Structure formats: structure tokens, C-alpha cells
Image 1: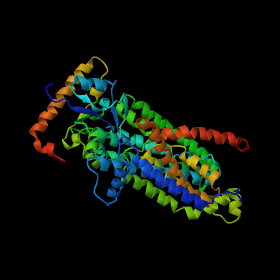
Image 2: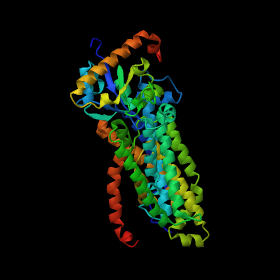
Image 3: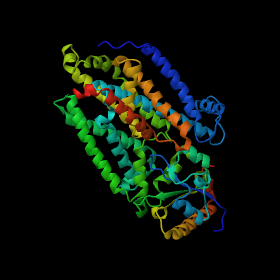
Image 4: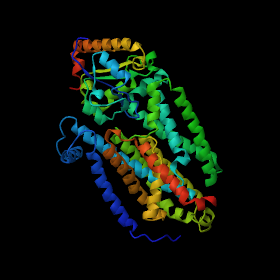
Length: 149
Length: 357
């Protein structure tokens, strides 16, 4: 993958409090294989755990990865993004996050996050591909990238 | 109706508790994962009150996040303790707490339904509007879940408008079991959906993270409305101590007192658990502490329970965040670790009285 090594963060929040994945998780491995740096693992987070807004602001990642819940990928919400992505864009206190300002929040199918076998290679390729697609799209839509600046 | 003399009067206790609460609020705002000097925190608080320039970068947002968290903890603690005091007064039993009315179970069920909706388990029309209202949906569903289950308990326990505390207690236990069954079924059925099941589980631990002004306003309004009941029930609950019949014989409208106190208790605790999730034992422990340290007269105990509850929950939150840092526990877990042993202590201490029930 030929792109700057982005600091990425997995984030999930259904209104009950946020959570993320640090090192020693499948998601961390998947991000590494896709050429991303796991921002949570970089500050010593191990395993899955809570992440409040203060910690999220402190990490201020380049890219935030959310999952579309299993039921949602079937299409009832179309391409609106999952609940976590909606929250990130709707929450005024997170408007200053780099990933939010630059529209770098990516909602991925839940299966990408649930991979636990050799399929992780496929998941990492898929993740890398989708990140590249998002970056390419943002570079073609400078106006979108400017939102919130 | 005489009570043991306490060295410090209720007024002095109010002043002491409010002073400690103010200091703990400042302390709470100065603790967090980002290092912010106290001076910066104070400038941030002043800026959020419109008295100065906002802090640079994310610092202002971080100070405000901490401010809302601290206020939310204080308000939730105050509401749960006040509610617990009212329930103990009505039940004439120091082992009673708001969860007996189904408040906690109803709130959890409401929150679980909201998380299911957010997680995509809803028709398209509902989902389209619900996903955008993600941050509000859980507290709103939780609030109405708490009030709905409490209303069901009250309805099933009453006959012709009359309600006995024993019936209320038993119906409360039965309805709580039914609600817990539905909640467990939801948890089991969503096990295959990691994100949804994790979110439902996380809610049961309670949370004070990421609270906002809206969350604080919800608890504040619930508590303020519930506090209106105070002048109409406080003295009457003191007269309840020797039994409802005795209270009725000296002119107390026991039915009105019970309904007013239970409604106020349900409102205060529903608002609290709606924004902070399941936080048990505050409503049980704090009125007891007030009774032991300050007064057992409800006219003093109920108002004192509010600052005492606020200080109890906020202080516990500050203490464990200062000691454990990022490994800090969620408030529901923390309170269960404190409250469980305290409940056992009460049972052991009062076992002679309990054996006479």
C-alpha cells in the first residue's frame, strides 16, 4: 500500500460509551497488515476497552474505522454509515477531531471486524482497498475535505 | 419519634457537605487522561461560563467534558440517594432501594431496546430517524422504560387506588424478574452481533463518560420535580415510622403520602439511571450513612441525602479515577463493589430485627 502511514483508530459507540481495540487484537493485526498504525496500540492500549471523548480527542487519529452493525449492512440505512459514524459527525464536541474535519471516518461491514482466521489477510486487503478508495474520493472532492475546517 | 442526639446538626451538615462537594467538583474536573494544570482547568471553567477566552485546541472541550461528567455524577448521586430515602420511608425499611420499584430493570430494558434500534434491529423508517438521534435515544428509551415498569408495578400492586407496601414489594420483585428475563433474552439473542451485545452489556455497568449539558438537565429536572414532593411527605414519613395505621389515626392521608413519595422517587431515580445506566446501592447506602451520622428524621434526612449522595458518587468516582487512572471502573461496578458488602453488613447488623419480620 503506497500511502502515508495513517494513525487509525477503531471506534464503536451506540450511545452507551465508546470503545476501541488496542494491541493483541485481531483488529490491530488487520490494521497493521493494511499499512495503518493503530493509534490506541501506539499509546499502550491492550485488548478491547472503553474510550471516552477526552481520550478520543487526545489521540486525534488521522482515520477512524467504525463498523456497520450486522443488521445494517443488509441495507436499511443504505450508505448512511453506521451508528458510530453518525455519532462522530453529529457530536459537536468531536467536531475538532482531524478525522471528522477531513471526513476520514470509514464505516466497514461488520464481518471485517469479526474475522478471526486466515481470512484476516482478505480482511486486511479489503480494509486497505477501502481506505485507498476513501482517500482517492476525498482528493477528488476537496470541498468535502474542507468541511468543518 | 425521638432520635439519638447527634453532635452536629443538619444545618451544619448541609454546609459541610456543600463545601466538600464544591471542592470535589473542582478536583474531579482536574483529573483526566490529559494532563491539564489546575490553573488551565480553572480558566477553562471560567471560559465555559463566558468569563474569558476559550482554551486553545481540544483543551476547552476537554474541560467542558470533565465539567459535565462531574455535574452529572453529583446530580445522579443526589437523585438516587433522595429516591432511596423516600423509598425507605414508605417501606419503613432501611433495606429498601429504588430498584425495588423496577426502575433499574425498566431503564436497562429501555436502553437495550434503544441499542437494538441503533444497531439496525428496526424497520427502515424508524432506523432512518433513530440513527441520527443516536446520542439521545438511549437516555430517552431508558427514562420511559424506567417509568413504564414502575407504573406497571404500581398498577399491579394497587387495588382501587389503595396499595400495601408488602404487595408493592412482592409485585416489584415479580416484575423485576420478568423484566430481567426479557433483558436476558435480548442479551442471548444478540450474542452473535458483537457490537450490539457489547453495547448492551456496557450499559449495565453504568457510565458517566461523555455526558453533556442535556444529560445533566435531564437529571436536574427529574430531581427538581421530585423535590417538590418534599414538603408534602417529609413530616408524614416520620409519622409512618410507628406504622401506617398509627399515622392514619392522627390524620395523615397515608394513601396520598405513599403515592406522592413513590412518584417522586420513581421520577428522580428514572432520570438518574436514564443518563448514567445501572448504578446500584447509592439509594441504599447514602440514606443509611445520613441516618447514622446526622439524623433519622425524614424532614432532615431527605434534604441531606441529596448533597450526601452527590458527594458519595462524585467522591467515589474521583477517588478511583485518581488511583486507577485508565483502569478505572465504571460507576455501576464500583458502587456494586462498595454496596454489596455494605448491604451484607446491614443485614448482619439488623438480623435480629429482620428475623422478626
